[in-house]
Image (cartoon, rainbow, N blue to C red; front, side, top):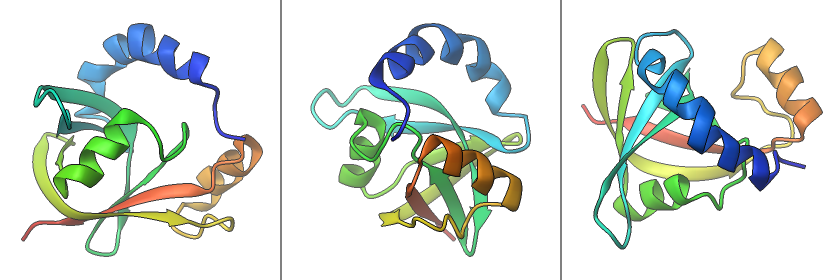
Length: 126
């Protein structure tokens, strides 16, 4: 069970607008900058982000079928604004991992309760 779409809608309308400006500077958070597949419009989506070997990993708390995930996959990458830096990424890939191995232990337990088993891995562009 991932978080319901009603929670995603509420977060998009309310929570993201409040937290959005903060995510660029707080550890463990980031803003994904991506383009719409059809509109070409630039979108900014606040996320939790973790370092992975050569890049980043994001827990897909709303599942892999969200618009921002599909946009990043279609574009072959995105920009991540985190801790005052803008990092270009490439080679997005979905990974289903019921053990949640890429997550830190405390986060792993929380994601287990929520039922999150899908992750997006992104490589840094060197």
